[in-house]
Length: 339
Figure (cartoon, rainbow, N blue to C red):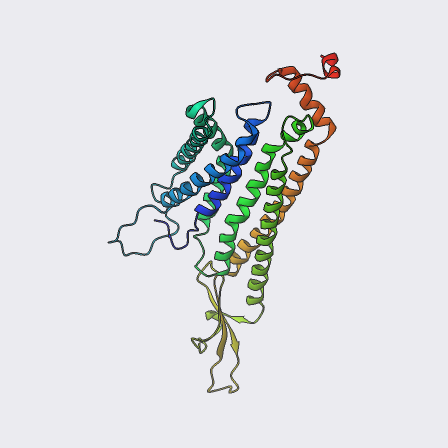
């Protein structure tokens, strides 16, 4: 069974994912190329999906942790996955949540397609955001590996938000089709997508800065001068001695204050460092590299949004609209001549 005390809360990240999914999916489906819904439904879709996604996060955490009975007194093993923690169950829950959100929005908005059509649209949108949900679950499961309160444990909990920010920034590409459509005055400009991209970049910067501080703290604690049990007799240890917990591994090292007496005195520990240096530093360096990579990805995504606003993409979008002819579109004379 997983360790619930180490497993992060999933309701907040899933609520944010739901709000973004509702807004971006409604925007995609309201694009004239699809015309499944209309642009004004986006606020309702964001709110409804956010509420259902928060409840879904609570349910998924319960599935990841499994059921623990009051008579079980043994300590949970964070490396053991219960039978309820299966990808198939997670996929089914996310799809049903998407269908429920779509049906609720369609019912409240009195959509033409009815609740059945709304449920189908919601399930389709859930498929688009399914990778985001599975990535969040994977990072949350990995957050159990380190001891509570340790340096790596803090980094792992931040990773849930960092990975969520990177996934949501990639999801803003769903709004890319609205840029050429807005130039033709068919829809409004997808400015909220840029705000989402900016917010994810700020979150990524904050997570990266915290991970850099954590890495420097671990490196400072592991500076030359540490002694292990193999280096000689155990030193005197005061309970008030500061302890730095790296989080991974059970190694124990100490920084010593040498005794003034060469014969009768014993060295005294002035700092204790718990954990395996290689494992901890490796985890922290990977966290820093992940943050840098996420920022680079967001730069590419910002460039993609800029490209979507170019005249070339607008012309290409216009040609596709003219070729399909659905929904009704008045092709410009130049476009008709080219046909």
